[in-house]
Image: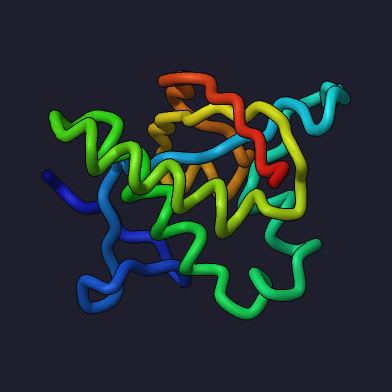
Length: 133
């Protein structure tokens, strides 16, 4: 995959290049406790800053979401169910119930920096959760 340069942004590939396209996964909250949000909330951008525990370790929820997405696309249903349950217990525990969706995003770093837009934004699946004991 060819790399482009973008100063002053860089990748960890010693230091002045980045891939022309990136793909990652995201979680969007659709509803909580019977209330549907006007726009789905991006978990990392909207939820993590409001949660004191999560603010301290932004990379943990992000990495968990990436593992969640990879497990969803993989062929191991047991691993997927375990990661899904781990995500719901650890990161959605402040909600009693709700619905969220797993999204596969493709984006160009330069375009994302300029506009915040994605090239491709696919909802892989929607999930309901219930954390009531």
